[in-house]
Image (cartoon, rainbow, N blue to C red; front, side):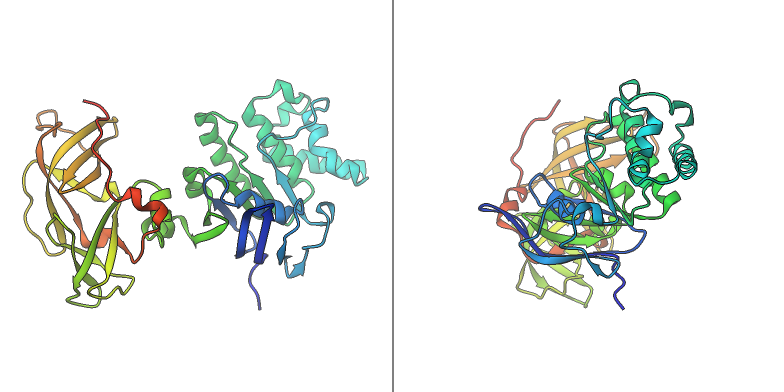
Length: 383
């Protein structure tokens, strides 16, 4: 039995010479908060429009709850869409905007009043029901748009960059609002965004897209901690890439890597890459430790001498860029505890950096488009 609720099967879509979606197969579970994440032009909005019925695929089919909906017009699909622009009717009150779908369907007035009341309670705007859109804040307009979409009880709610027009603080607040609303109504959300923080904080699972294809599907933790491609590793958060060749695997789980100009490095080998093969090691900045003093040697601790090239103090943490061999490596040091008499690490200081073998992840290939990420030239960010 197929457990997928909304399913794309081998979907392709081109606009002239541009192939927006290239043979994508993807399934969403019922009640899931699922995000399509990627840069502009990656195909994520085209996928959403194919689900909504605003576009027809050149090849492939779209299924909802086991039913082929590929040829159905938008108004015959049990999906609703929320756009970045909100698309509220300016001459209508909040109450009438929310009620619009049920009014068009000519539902009984008593039912409309009850459902609108329920939606107003859900978005906590009962005291704003008589206002018009130009009297509302951006966040309030977004909540009204959500309520108007949900009142028709769709099987899937499609959200196309819904927070892009909001400022940072309001966007952070609306992330919490959307998460609470999803938990309350329990329907499937398909969320399109280029903002990794939005996707990571909201989603049960994420599909990272680039060039019309899916690079990886997984939970936020899987995407961040174990990226499958160089694009995903670089697009989701910050990372350091080191290029080398495996020369020994003393046991099945760990390998020793030779990196030109650096001491040998040990890494967990979840890709079963064999000795003699090239590899690309990615280490997140927060996994790397830094100090003036050389730490004790420990099994599976990778230790490199370095020189500090840039320091940025950010209150809760400090970012360092250090030079180790030909590599410029970023280190993120959290300020869990701060000592005023501690000797700070400054620009041009010699230092030591280290990370555990379990904290790096290996890639067996590196996309040509991402090769510039391997070695960042020195650049002064600040004194």
